[in-house]
Image (cartoon, rainbow, N blue to C red; front, side, top):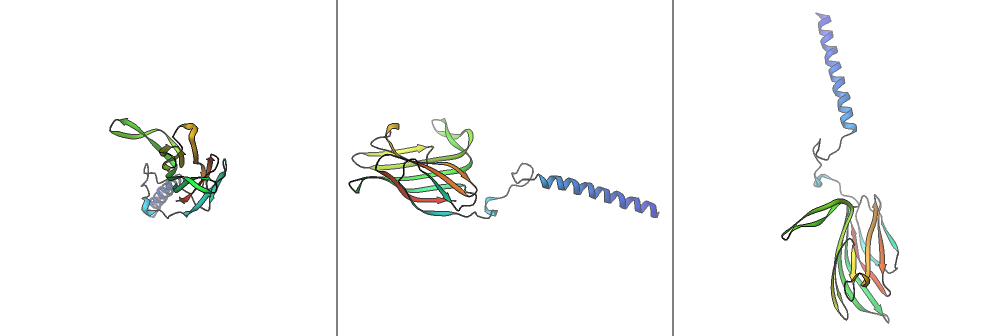
Length: 192
């Protein structure tokens, strides 16, 4: 009888060892995507370090690095593009823009009454709107740029101020600027 009990204990131990090995394999490759495991709710995540501040961008072709951020997911901009003549501002554009960092889609028309996510996922999706007042008034809506201002109209040749999120990593966001003569961008950048 003692041999029978010992065999049963060994069988149980062997079964437990096999289960532990399977569990180790599962844990080594697990994720929380919801495919094989329960997804993590957004409100259960510890917030990343965020940054906000007013930045003036006045150098054409410059790439600005917005640092001290941990795993950025979004860049918001609200501010102005301005043209200066004779030391004073003569054209002002109020601009609001947003960039989503990480797997994202642009909306695409589905029919005349609805839109859907379209195309392939992008690593950066960004858009902006601007209202410019000078000798003429121009409204600019852009897909593909955090900031885009057209003046005196929105033709491609008349883009006077543009800022585009060009890359990001776990500790910074790069924004490349294109400015016409005497134009600059000044506003608040919020990186979350």
